Picture (cartoon, rainbow, N blue to C red):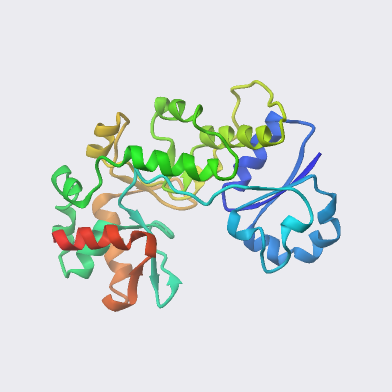
Length: 280
């Protein structure tokens, strides 16, 4: 059996997990941009794949409509925000803004900067009283429903696996980077779509997404969710932390290079950001 997976950065972990769970399955995996760049290489052999796995928006892409060449399993580009509700993406003049945590930014820090608050004032906002006002508590069930529902839309049932994920701590490195134990269960669900049995094993491949930025679960949020909390921001592509004060200072340095009106949050975060700014 041969599968082609064209997906986001989670594709590496999925490919590794599928290799462990189903040794007779060959999975060629790459991200969206790489597929477009290498399309001529893949075009002659697309019909040789037994299944194509990709995100819903990429089924019909600029290169090919996958639905015309092989059965397609759609896996969502989804997020689970309950652990890291402060995380957001920003753009400047339509381009993704990169900062001390690569593409990730803090809503609180961004809102404080946009309001003209000092770094010290921004630091003072990181506490339970403000998290409550910002809407960071009490969102577990809605995040769970959205996360599981988005996979169910593609035929992947993760409902039974979900309760086990948090037993070893927070299961998300960021809102869109799941821990490898979650990725393994997504791989099992992918096999189940084709009625394929998965090898019984607790062995997991390396968690490659730990190499990316890892956003902490703030202590007060962690306490409410029963996991370990932190204010250490693990940076991209290095085993190094920024403490909260360092992260705020570095974020202000990046933001201050731009006009306030040019810095925008992704549309999905506009409502949350408006609530935060209304509290400041």
